[in-house]
Image (tube, rainbow over all chains, first blue to last red; front, side):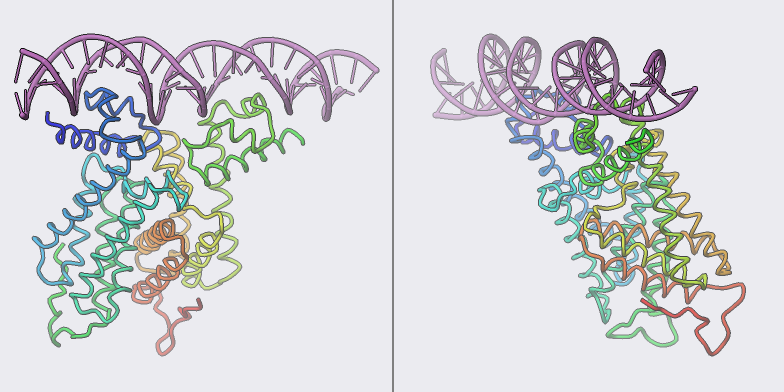
Length: 204
Length: 204
DNA sequence: GCGAAACGATACAGATCGGTATACCTCTTC
DNA sequence: GAAGAGGTATACCGATCTGTATCGTTTCGC
């Protein structure tokens, strides 16, 4: 394994264990044992455990947002449908056997102080996720794109939270239906053509 | 302090510290120091730390649900308004300086295994909270009370999750507006009188 | 008022935590 | 093929973790 591969391998292992057991409950000894790496190696790549957590979250942040973007762009072209398709992406993540809730919410839940770097990293991720929804809402020409994005975002968080507890995917589908209902009632700068449904069909 | 008072004092102290720092990050040494109690005393009242956590969550569960019930019954009489008033209650908890997210979601986030007693306690709380919403939705004579309750519940979780990250109360108000919009469109077994709004006024 | 139960204080056990030090091995690179 | 960087393995550090043992003191029920 090359140096960069070791780093990636450590980040993947850490992410998996953090997701499985949480951040405090996952010791560095477990991480290095699972990664099959000496402790010295871990500390050559990361200053300390917090640095590892931050690097892992940063990696996950990019992964998640890129995956959602790719999924949405591949599965829908109409901007309104794209907003709804974000729920389909969420559903795939929730259906994953390894799903144990949003890692950023967990991170913020274990590092509740708003000045904690881990909390701030989670906050940053959520801001970027919201920004993407605003981008979609803007492209969909909603009259209040920020409000729409915040609503979709709230439904995302609610769906994932309920799914974290119940461990079923239904909340995500329900959230999508709620989003659909809110979107068709929302004001648009360019209203859909009369007589049709403006392409806002519900496909799921 | 009488024996029962000490137990209550320990539970209150533990709950405050769990809320402030999380469950793993709060050691029993910190709890007893903050409570001004000997370690022997804590372990005379609780078998171990997990037992303390479970007792604390159980207490909090009853407190929370009673508080919501009392608030809702005091601030609204119409069943539909009561469903909306649950958000006003949430807003008071979110506005609290000590608010750091839902303690049960945090507990489930730190104890992700579904067979973990702490996870199960959180699950139980969420089920009871949902049951109350179903009770309200049933009283409001919605055609699909379970679906309505699940939708309100999802908005609750979303609002609290977003508030946990942003540390502002706005998400709760937004969730209430979304709930209002969904409720007025929902089918009722006894439809509201035509010409009026059926008492589904938005007061907040 | 007397005995038992519960309290506080402290010390301690054993495990685990994050992190470092040391010594040896294995590659790459000039 | 020597140098050096980065790997492994292991031992170790001090701190902290949950939980127990000891012991003197306080408090409460009878």
